[in-house]
Image (cartoon, rainbow, N blue to C red; front, side):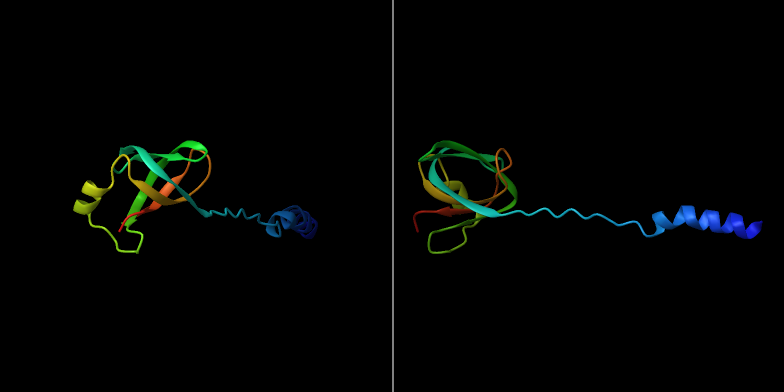
Length: 109
């Protein structure tokens, strides 16, 4: 009798022991945008006038500012050079309302 109960218990538990585990993979891509700055809130957001119209971006946790030649800008230089009217290229991750900038490239050196 004990064997029968053991076999029934094992039979009921077996499907759970060998159950498949599902895995979800999320793919993120880095995309570029470019235009002229029309609104700029340091550390928060930026709006660019692009060929398709105005586009809103948010800043990620770490944003790198560089010149067209690749020279990284310090905070003081960013405060003076990044402003409304300056043409820039931005690298961002995400789509739709979740466009998070991680790199801003000034079109001037």
